[in-house]
Image (cartoon, rainbow, N blue to C red; front, top):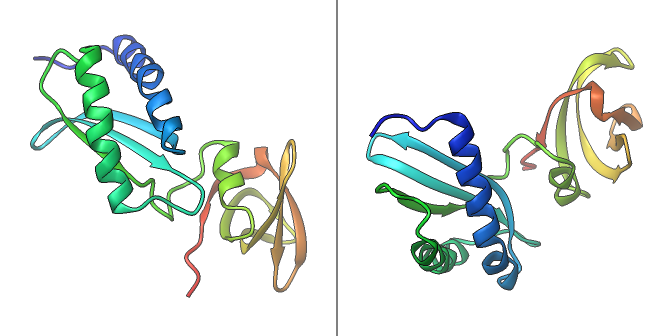
Length: 160
């Protein structure tokens, strides 16, 4: 089968999101991202999920079984595919405000478009998420308020 057109793919992803949301909520899990694409072994539907305290391998296995049943009943994907339920990963770039909220109180790395106090990259503790900005506590510069529209990339930093 050829490549799916982008509009059809978006519509299918929206339908998948709608169908699986209640099953995820029952388990106290939040859907972070849906990826549906061809890979070496064929089409893969990858669901990136998270929950307070983090997602475990056992959680992913349980969810894989549950979501597989829900999708089979709905029968909206007409081609063969593999389902993977996975963690978004600790160092995945933040895409939405909720990503920042999940990282509150943890170390983050923020790369900026325009320098703040002569630097374009900071590592510090994400202290607060405001309407249009975040506050990051750094060792050398103290607490910085950084506007969302000045952020090129932000992600949780693994602290050793």
